[in-house]
Image (tube, rainbow, N blue to C red; front, top):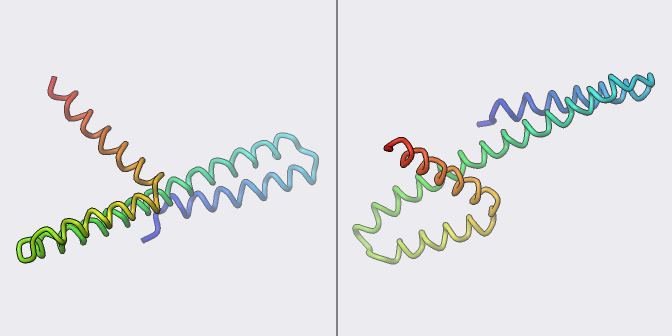
Length: 118
């Protein structure tokens, strides 16, 4: 599933590039600057959409794996827990920035929960 931020961001990026190129060609500093701004805004939105897609995909994978591991642990013991730990280590090793984003989101959520109880 493709996030709408990716599509909208790509459209803004393309539109900004076109506007910047037209501004450059016509010598219009205003159009050129607006185009560069829209291009940067589009890239940021596209990257944000990609990050959301990646988090969604990893969450789905972790959920599926956890469900499978839970069913197997009751039958086979600790080997599946060890396999799960290794798989999480692999995911974090391959996507350290995404792991930081997820850890930050979890920490932020916990902070909100703790703060709301006061």
